[in-house]
Length: 133
Image (cartoon, rainbow, N blue to C red; front, side, top):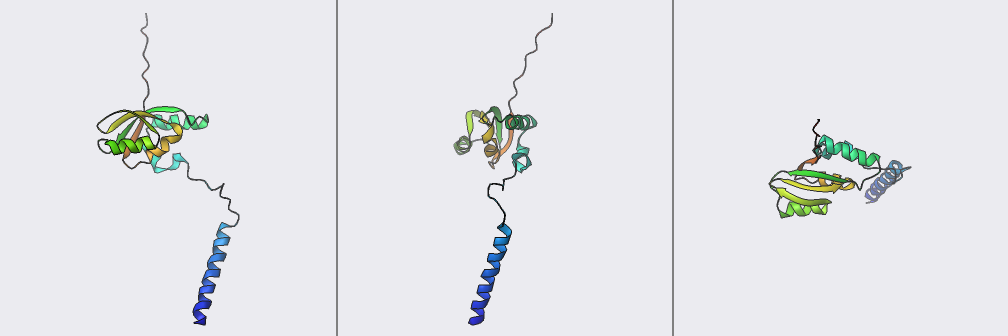
């Protein structure tokens, strides 16, 4: 019985020492989540959307509106629509598995992390070319 208590005490003491040593000097404010660009979900953005997000971040304008198409794995139902809206997507319309709307730059990662979202493409307006005389 004494040996069991002694072993339990040593195990607890060792755990406490190792835990204290591993956290010594850590500051909770310096521990950061990986940046969006280094996550798997970054690959769901087309290159135009990636550039728009990086520009918004650089300009410290994460409230920037990014008009986009969101592609899903299958046709969007009301549940999918609700999930998108709850994560910051402003729903405009959908056809099949493609929804059109916009998102603020700071909510883009939330949308990309949804498991049923496969691609997010920035809507780039076409520039009309003027006719030369």
